[in-house]
Image 1 (cartoon, rainbow, N blue to C red):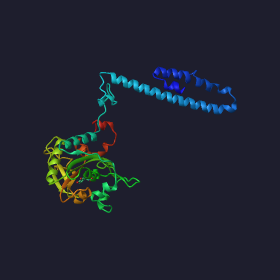
Image 2: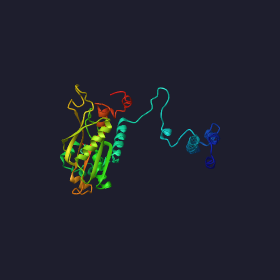
Image 3: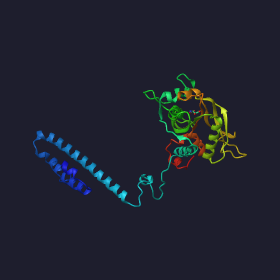
Image 4: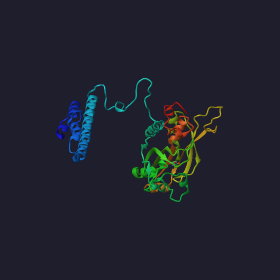
Length: 340
Ligand code: DAH
């Protein structure tokens, strides 16, 4: 029987094999039917043997059939001159037909891709750090040792091996410095986690984008230039920015960066910026010497800026949303742009 299984080449062969052994009058079926005629003391053992044989034969046949079907489908695709198998759209299952809306990219994915494109255009490397970080990467390397009070602001989920779900994309700073040395510019967008009570502005899972530029003679003027250019490209509108003093352990001096409000219309009250004309956008500053040193960079020779903004927040501003919980809701009406 093994030999016969190996010789099966077409679906018709498989059908013939099935009829011969497993079908209504197949050999295994017949033997199972004949169990009633054999000596009762041997019946149970023989029955068990036959059932195992039947199941194993079915499984082997099923696998062979499946492989033949897959090979036939592939051959059909490869030989069809109208199908380009190198085009991802060809092999991505997409619903189509009247009344069916094709799937699309999640709004967060769209914003991440747009941000990546903008920063790549300004010479930034795009990095992708892991969502699980060591305590060192997430805190200690960022000038935030165990007893530092700033740790309280970022409660997270801990793994039993001492690692954690990163609370900030800043957790990848140390790695980037060690990877690229003292002169580079890079961004690292990605998912971050906090142990938070949920409301319209707080989620336990959201997205940030970290950015760093290190070199000789880098100053806040460079940061202002890049942030203004990036925001102007995202909103397709001239954006002004301003800095206010802000505290983050990994930068000195540190700032809160505000962007001019894109929703304000002259003479009307603006609910987004409460008519102040500015919306809080991100934290940033000049990288603290301890952080540079920890990344193997000599702070007496090199300096740099860092920033970290919420991709989720940016998406809220871009799509004019007032509740961040929509993004993880899985609500199709929202994802298709139908609700706010
Ligand atoms: N990691 C900070 C946070 O999640 C944001 C941040 C602030 C990042 C200042 C930076 C920075 O790189 O310089 O709140």
